[in-house]
Image 1 (spheres, rainbow, N blue to C red):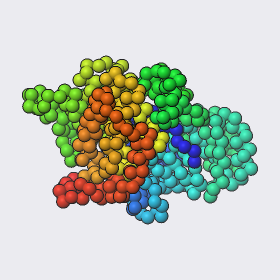
Image 2 (cartoon, rainbow, N blue to C red):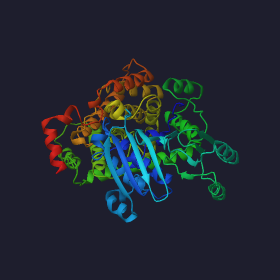
Image 3 (spheres, helix red, strand yellow):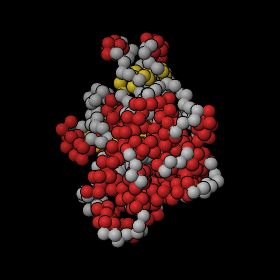
Image 4 (tube, one colour):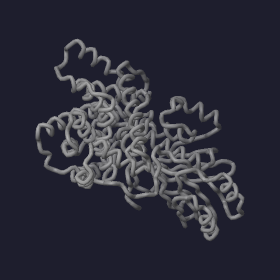
Length: 517
């Protein structure tokens, strides 16, 4: 399998979503939407199976996998308000869905095995969540595929391989044609647009065609079919910058323009929208949030009251950072709309730190958007060489990554250079190595809130140190490689399973019992 080429708006900042976890809630929703398309919008009866050796076995309900799958099967978007009343919508649509846990015989993190059956057809799907809302379908009815939801997929099944080859030759509109010779031979046609309806109707009528499915993309930036980006590592980016000097945020726009086949202006507009969602989340959280099924209540308004009374220390940037991170996390935990940046579990670190420092410095929206773009470069390097999934790399993959991104962004807010941004990111990631993921009561609230706040503070401190001339010593690329190696060596119990760390303390067990009642 070729190396994944990350996109800022697919992999790093996004999706815009509701739910406690991007790798659970948003990823499951995307898998569900693709499953719905495979069944031509008529899912019928659905059975979703989780592996008993996987983190999903203990967290699929509390962290939103079941919710996401239901929403996706209904065809909803990740930020749809109807996600709060899914069972009624399923009943109205006549869709039955059941969740179970068993031994798949496979040891894959975040594995979803889905069987869908209506009066006309049945299909079995194997898919995985790869972190931050990203997914990959790996198998359809026993035939190996690799579908990431970043293009229009036209799937044609037939027992006649020669006929599939002939059909492929008539599909000159497809960017890529793949013939899969598995348990059920399958022709996969990939394109950046839906195929012509007349062509589809013609192919469906062929006697050799058993089934034809049209699967729409679930990612905002489509694959272009081109594998050329200006750089894929920090070292390459710094070399590129030597030949083509420009501001750090312009480097991010250049990358995304090449990766997604979009203009720099279009990429800028997309980040403007991300900024607005982040800002709205802060404002909503500071007003107070309410939701029954959570551990912590709304705490950020009380922090603000004490700050306004002058009872807290005198550090405006740190206080704003703490407030904003808390507010965003509370919106997430109350099923409000947030940006997974890079994940929902770490959605407070990067936005809260950047917005907090920017407001302390009285900077403009344009300055903040520039900083978000700069920070996203760090996310690109992590997504390309490591992971944002806590099930694979612990919390260092989530809050640690957020800290590295935030540190680079804060340097931009302070007027620093590209080299200083990457140095600050390196330092912040070094400080995050080995951070475990041990959600209390399997909810993404505690100690997640504290880790988000401390990671944002880590980012601010590292930015200040680098601006003052401190040397991080280890280049960012080497730190990312180390982070990946360390994360994969963490015990399974400390990687988002709720089977270790604080999650198994007596008090945590009591909290879980109380919530389950």
